[in-house]
Length: 416
Ligand SMILES: Cc1ncc(COP(=O)(O)O)c(C=O)c1O
Image (tube, rainbow, N blue to C red):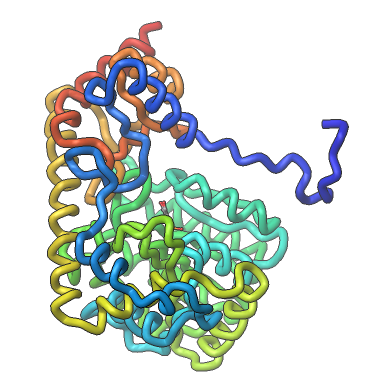
């Protein structure tokens, strides 16, 4: 570019969004051939079986009934105390670790990731995540002048690859004082994988071994954006209890989001929750992240915070919300079950799906396969090494037959 006035660190920034592109192609196809012919498996939001954006009914009711002043007023920068208390208790359910725990309101889970990268790694540092990852992690790192490196998530048995994980954590710790490790579990985007409780034992054993060097700090950033669609509430949170009693140079931060769990995507509300054995670390956490909020977006949406605390404080509303959310979860579960059983019949290899909005098929030429699928009016997101299917967005009736068509497209591309 010859005409550029951007500062040197900003030059050339351009977020090319494959998801947006794939969705646009699906919308165009639907305009030409009709909605019922087109399978749009690109969208990262929960659609009901009529393919309308789903809202948890009690969430809608409470939201519409909020007094206007609860919507338009400024919120405290750290977040309203009732919201923070509610989100902490909802995040851990019966598995609150024995530790100092505090939260800061953030602009969605994205805001929590942003603050963690900014405040817990140094300029130029490398952040670690798995080789299958949500694309914006890289953008969030690079915009803060950090790099992103990856380890191989699965071993040959499609289990969590603790050996690859250990090697990368140790490699980065040999070069950096702080290492932020992003772990998106349970119900990982894009694979639907969840670390087991024994995977967590291995991960924490490694962190404790590394933390013996007290000059080093390990910051596990646990992205729990999909935790409300990951299985039974307490079972999928059991690992959180293990975050208590850790050395003070291991500082887990949970990135929480109301986008999926409360179907409030556009309300941009989430929280970062810090868990530490040290009171000072937690006080610092409150101070530095509140400061960064002031410097980034000031305070966040008051209405969604009020919505969450209103629901949390009323046992009946909370029970009703959870019931209605479970019905949405059952919808995705059913779609994923159909896909997985058909994939087996079609000999279509998948990455290990446990739960969540997405599943992934590994493929050699993902862009070409997705292009080929357009002939069948199927639209999915090509990843670096596979194809992401948003089971959250495709009705059960349209899921039927998809696996066989994907298997056929993969064969056709391989043969061409
Ligand atoms: C893996 C993952 N983490 C975090 C988020 C954060 O979402 P939000 O910023 O809307 O809360 C998303 C949303 O798509 C996601 O897929």
